[in-house]
Image 1 (cartoon, helix red, strand yellow):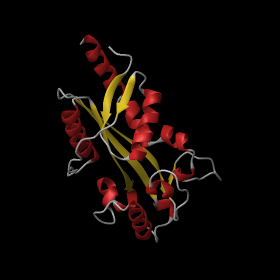
Image 2 (image 1 turned 45 degrees about the vertical axis):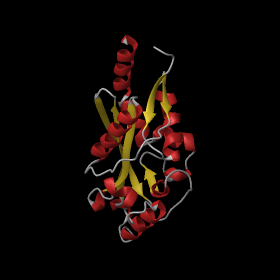
Image 3 (image 1 turned 90 degrees about the vertical axis):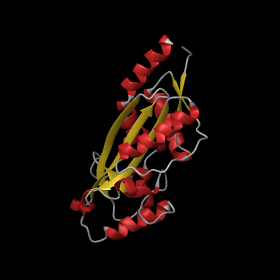
Length: 208
């Protein structure tokens, strides 16, 4: 076994790449994410799990390496879990992330604070070229601010206030230190839940 095993990170999103490089170093010593230069499949699944598996299967087949893919989104309780898997396209088909956020704020403009509960969800799929598949889904609960604050991370981060902050310190995720956000995020939680799968894969690679 080499000192570090590689897996391909099935995304072209530079912000996600930076986050996954950071959290991989925290929870997966011995593994290194490789860049992905393959196709982006049509994400036509009806759940985060389905879409993560679609992307990971294509990346594993293209690269010949174990592939990690995530599908993430914002689920708002008063909207029955929407935008959910449609988070990236909420305002249309162009993936205009700022427009997505602003439309959501408009839709919630008359909703009072106690009813603005929401959660970020991330499904992570690990797929090997041999066809083994592992999926973990985790959540990050909070509520939505009435206005945007902060400019770090993804646009939805600037309206999401995570649970558990001290009274008087109710900051949106976009106002947090970048590395602190990485450690607390739904993606970090999902990757931590996949550690046993990576450990099993390490044993397989060590045998040969």
